[in-house]
Image (tube, rainbow, N blue to C red; front, side, top):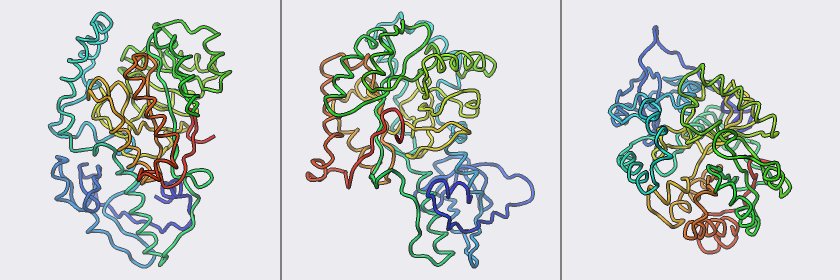
Length: 410
C-alpha cells in the first residue's frame, strides 16, 4: 500500500497498513468502504455477491488504528488493482455482459457493419445500450471510487500519525486545477480528409490535440497527412490495427497484431495508442511498445465493453501510462443519447475538477463534419478555453488547467 499511496499523493508520510487476512482464500465480492465507496475483492468482514447488496457490508467499521499502524479487513493494493483493471466486471451479477463477452455477436456485427446504413445502425446501438441508466456501478456520470479510496487511506494515515497536514507534490504542474487532453480518432477516409479543417478549429480556440489513425485496412495515410499534423504541432498516435473489433478477442491473435501495431508505432514515431471501440484487456498490455495508452474509460456504461477503471487520474499498467477517458464520446452524445448540447460535458468537467482530475475528451473528425455537431464541439472548446469567464459566471473552474495535447503533462 505504501507504494500505491505514495505514487498517488507523492508524500513520504504513509503509515504501515496491516491486513491480517484469514487462513485460506475467501471468495471475492462487493463491499463498501464508508457510505458511498463500492469495492470489489476479498474482505474478511464480509462481501456481497450482488453489487446492489454491497452496502450491507461496510469494511470501514472493521478498521482499527493501533499506534501508528492501520489494521484493515482487506488488502488495499488488491482492491485498487481490481478496480483499475476492471476485474469486477464479470461479477456484476445479473448485469448484461458486454459484447466483449460474446465474440460471435461482435464478429457478426463487424462483418456486416459497413454494409448497414447509419440510419439502421444507430437504432441497433441504442437498443444495445437501453439498460445503461440502471447500471449501479461504476457511478454515472463520473466514478471516483479509486480516488476516494486513496483519500480515505490518506486520512487514516494522518490520524495514525497525528498529523493535521502532510506535504505532497501537487498533481499537476504550476498548481493547475486539472489537466485537459483533447483527442481525435480518425475512423474513415472522410474523417482523414476533414482533419486539416478540424486542426483549424482547434487552433482557433487555442488547442492542439492528438490524432489517432488506423494504420491498416480503412484508408491510406499519406506522408503529407502525417507531415501536416506534426508541422502544425499536433500529435499522431496509433488507433488499433484495422479497427475490426477483434484485437483482444484471442491471446495468440492479439500478439500477432500487437507486433504489427508496434511496427507502425516505430514507423510513425508514435508514443500513444488507443484500441478500436475502446476494447481492452489490460493484462495483455505488456506486448505493446507505447509510452501511454488511452483505451480505458473511467466508466463504460455506453461503451461496447462494459466496466471502467473508476479513477480520473492517470496510472501505470506496467511500463505504460494509462490516460483514462473521463468524458463521454461525441458519437455517444450525439447519436446514442441524442443530445446536441454540452450540458453533460460541462457536468462531467465540473465533477472531475472537484477532484483535480484529468479531463479527457474523444471527438471524431468523421462525426464533426456535420454542421450541427461541429457547432456543439466549438461550444465545448469555447467553454474549455475560457476558465476565467466560467469561474466568474459560477462555472466549475477554481484555477487553471494544464493542457497536454495528447499527453497528460508536457
